[in-house]
Image (cartoon, rainbow, N blue to C red; front, side):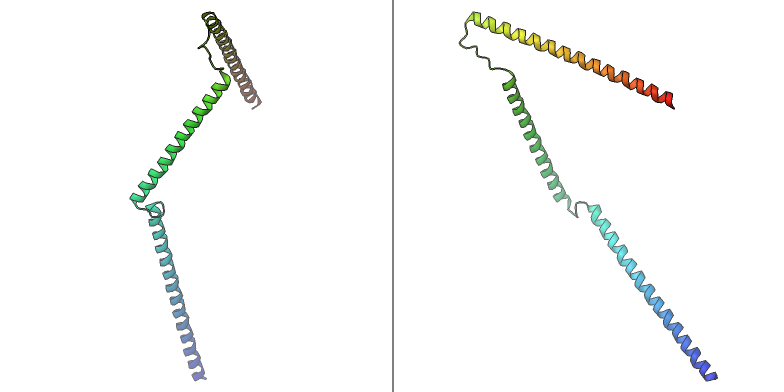
Amino acid sequence: ENEKKAVEALKTKERIKEERRRKTLMKEQIDQQKEVIAKQRIAKIDRMKKGLGGMNSEKRKRLKEIIMQRAHEEMQNERMKVAEERKLYLANRVPPLDVDNLSEAALVTKVQEMYNRLATLHSESYDLEQRVIAQENEIYDITQKMTDLDCKGK
């Protein structure tokens, strides 16, 4: 019986040793995995710090130049487009001035017509400006009324 107890005690000790050994191995493996993950994170952060996927300064500078050049070209194209649209608008809005073959009396008549047209346009412009001012005042008044109502309601 003592032998059985001794054998059982030895087996228990061996199981305990084996269990401790397994735990230490697992702990070492976990520590190694944590180390690998930490190294990967550090490497990833280093790559991110370098910027643009690890490009060197020369490549970044070249990329910046290309982007700036394209932006400049797009701006020039936009300016040209706006200028062309303006020319088309003016061509449609303002009739061509044919004064080469006109007599002096016809020129005077043409100048009077143009002056009258200009006066009409100025008058329309003034009317529109006054209308905008009136609308802005109306918006201001309505906003004030709304503010007053909000204050009274609270």
